[in-house]
Image 1 (spheres, rainbow, N blue to C red):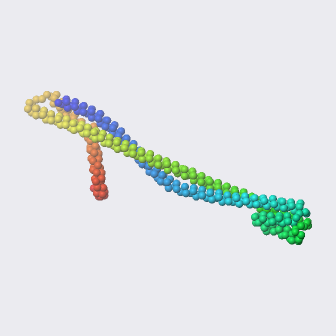
Image 2 (cartoon, rainbow, N blue to C red; image 1 turned 120 degrees about the vertical axis):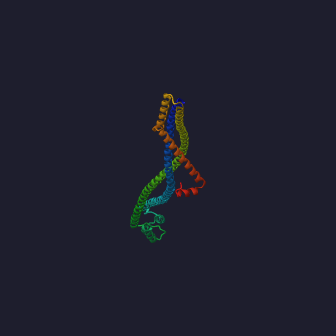
Image 3 (tube, helix red, strand yellow; image 1 turned 90 degrees about the vertical axis):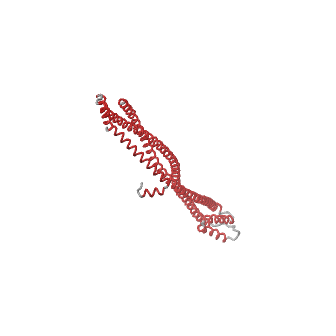
Length: 364
């Protein structure tokens, strides 16, 4: 019986050592997996919050950018329309100036070449044309001396405008026409300068507006990309959170089941060790009864029993065995705490308000 007890204990210790080694490995592995899942979950939660904040900011920023771009494009369209109106006016003025200059050139040539032999009616016709051009160009004040001279000379001749003007009239007309020609030419040059200056100012203004519009377009494109990226980020981090939570729950359950099994096996080993020690104590009591009855026992048996009993006592008092007891105590506390938390969660689920009131009074 002693040999069986010793052999059973030795075999049980060997199996227990192997089992506890596997339990330790499993515990370390599951703890590492749980830790990794928590880290992944926490990191994903942090990134998810950042992506949501970035998405919110981008969604707030986009309407303002779109509205601002619309305003700048509207201003550019207005400026282009105004510039086109100015260009049309310039083109019309240039045409009128050129026509007036051509007419004055012809008028001056006529005075130089044909005024000696001409019908008075031709000069009057030219004066009417001069009046039309002057009115278009708004220079009647400058053309008036010419018209007056022609009118005065025509009035002095009563024979249906058939007259040969003197050289004084010719020279006066030439001088006045040349002065008017120079005036119109100067106005035409000013018109050209004003157009070039207006074109340059518009080009610079359009360049600035276009640059702002391009910048706004780039920012709108960037913000839209940011919105799309942040939506993908939210989906991605949400998936990571779901996977990490599933991993956390799975490894938590596996860890819990493994520790429950290890605790059960460790408890069984402790109980078996104490039971075997009790059996040895019982055998010792039996031998004491036998010794009182027969007065004599084999010394090797008595010594063997004593050695086994002492060895057992030393083992149950050893640090190694106490580690198993401490392990069992910790598992008991963990399980007890888990049971209390489970009960508390169940109570909260049944009556959340009551659980809150109890918690506020420190009952839990």
